[in-house]
Image 1: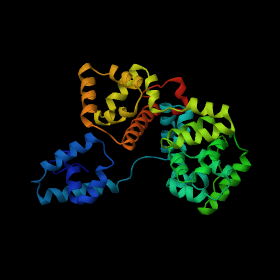
Image 2 (image 1 turned 90 degrees about the vertical axis):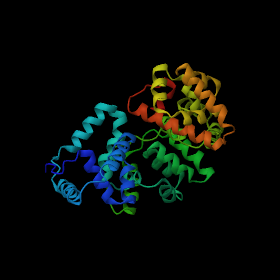
Image 3 (image 1 turned 90 degrees about the horizontal axis):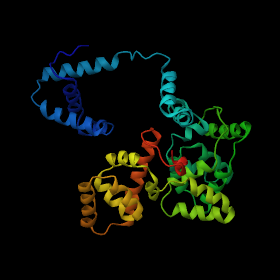
Image 4 (image 1 turned 180 degrees about the vertical axis):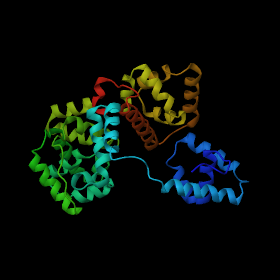
Length: 334
């Protein structure tokens, strides 16, 4: 339906948000980018004089738009799959495709991908460590790491060791496990792949573990299998590995990281990381960064680790999107 209020699209969106009330409008804004929020914020202040009649027309248009058929046919799944594969490559896109396309109606192991990590931990904590390892290997790395944090210390290293030594699972065994999980969710679905686990998966999960927990687990694994522990460590990507990122990638990262976050994260970094970062900034920007670090005074270790993890999460996101390329040692990271 054409606009009959004389308002722009952004202004009409602002009217809808103002009509929702504070709590509901805030929930909507949470899902928008900073630029979109800024545009809408300006628009919301500019439509205060809109007549009741215009507001009614905007709401009517909004309702009519929602009621219209989307026009998207049955080929949407294939389109999404093709776009993701083209953007990310077959291997990296496969897990995301399953999570997007299968997640709408999943059961068994796939259903776990849509559960809170603590709930997953509660579900598997009484299972054999090998079962837990298979479940964790099937999850996204960040989700598996959070779930592992909720399990007892003695279980974590055992599970990570088993994940690292997994080399594919017979389809019938994986289907049996899937059936067990499916019964708990009143559904049934066979897995499409039996390729889970491995050193790379274990390294990815450890990348998301809290500082200290990762070393504790690696130490326990090293006592059992020293060579395996070294292989896992070599595939991990930690904050100090940023020193190995090439200059172009580092400059792209710095454009996305707020200075205040960077100044906190660098408190716990090696000198080579600081040098890598400041050498890829303008002289004035580097001076401001150093001044900010000095002016802050003491910072708690928990704050430093939190800032580093946020930056690493951003780097991971950029690597996954293909915006940057990381060093060969960080293969597991991308």
